[in-house]
Image (cartoon, one colour):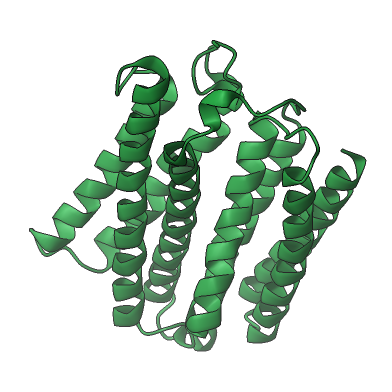
Length: 274
């Protein structure tokens, strides 16, 4: 456990440095700091990946504790961000939101309960793994979407400012927002379906109305409305940028809210009912 927490600590420090560079870039209006922010995000991700790799290779798996699920979610958010940046460098300024949120989740994970135990037999099904992976990817894409929405709002607010004028074209930001929300929504749908099928195998019912199931459903509805507003009502630009930014806490709350809910099927991913 000590080596896991060591690399976890390195990741938190490096992500914090990345956050600092992003803040400096927008405060001092220097694109140079954005490049440094991406660089330190990459270093933090490397340390974070080593942390998770050790996590999953323990002789006795670390059970799905609050620490693990929040830590994995933070990792997936940075993964999606760095992958997007590698293919579309114009998204790199989005780290101004991605990295502070990641640091927040890492700090939350650090103070959360950590457990070591054998993986419950109920996890030995493809539906469980599809559920976990889909939820992580959903979070990553809607996080980047929210960050792109923030860039859209900053660019419109500071029109005429040389630094903000260098941000991506508004139409490109708007279409990117749509793309990331769309992918995130597909992942949310897959998460809910696979979770229902997994729950059916474990409990004999597809839905149990525990708080995180409800929160996941709320998240799905929130992003379904986003897509409906764009595809049916033709919303574009600033309104949907605000929406994607304000919708993000709904998704994040399904992650950091794990330790706050009563004992139930999802709590800390500790399935104590069996």
